Length: 65
Image 1: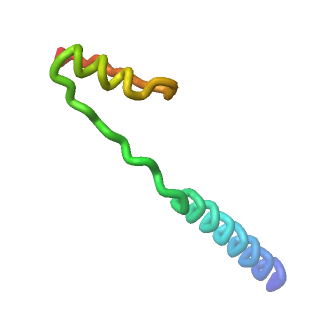
Image 2 (image 1 turned 30 degrees about the vertical axis):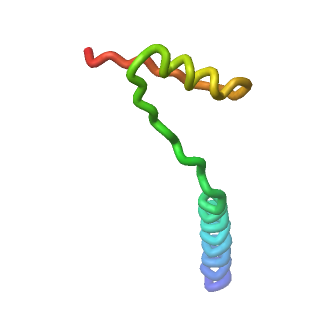
């Protein structure tokens, strides 16, 4: 019975260390900062859109209703 408990603790330790290694790996690389831009006119949107030619872009049109 003592061998079973020892084996269970060993596996628990291995799983815990593995989970910690994965968790630390997720935070090892810095994440890029997201930037939110408030545009006042269509010309601002056009200029900003054309500035990043060749890069993926996302435009969100939000309404308060």
